[in-house]
Figure 1 (cartoon, rainbow, N blue to C red):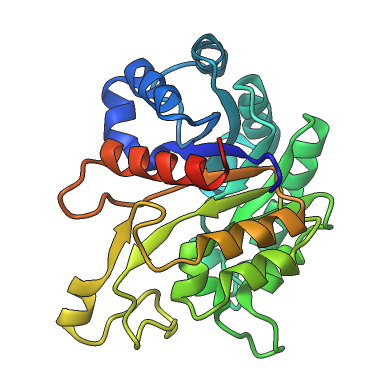
Figure 2 (cartoon, rainbow, N blue to C red):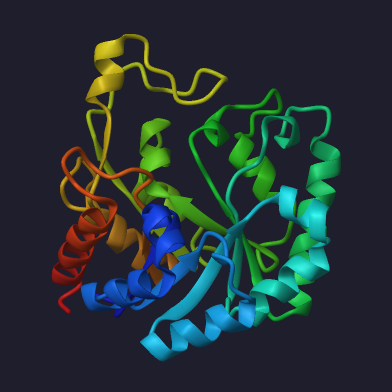
Length: 275
């Protein structure tokens, strides 16, 4: 198997990182992760964050952002900020309802995505888009929302960060989706879960459960403790040319702390990768 690098999205341990950024990063390094994906700067300057990660021996791979940040700072300033933090990529984490394909504002948001992609290129970065489940809704023109978003930029300027959990929740085959974007998939979000309800397909307003019992059954899990066929996803990621596998767990599994959950994922993934 390809020698993937293993990262973790810091949103997974957001409270720990906010309280003790350095201690959290040192613990992440000790777990066997190679790098981190930012979800904010935790009160530090970009340069301070870059220096801290370098001291600990972690790469800063990328950062999650959104159009709310570019509208506040400007696309050039956002790209410059994350370049100074050491990022190679910036990922749009999500689009607000009013910015999505099918909305009256999508023409404007599409132009903003294209502008951010160009700003990233100018700073030596690459822009990605990170999916949830709503992007698998089919538009009147036959494309999915996700396909419409990826049409906002060329394959060079706008690449993918497939979140395999939300893809599966939406009824898509995660491995097949990663393969679909071969050559355009440098980072893959590895996320596991259990208790997928039969009625969890996208209905137009997000992930919906039709009965309380189904909602209670759904739980984010450490990688390797849920329903995902992780080896198949890794095979697809290798075929697609991915470099980084990034663990993300939106919320810890019942009985786990966030740090315990990502530690389990690191052990499982490093074993699977033969490291």
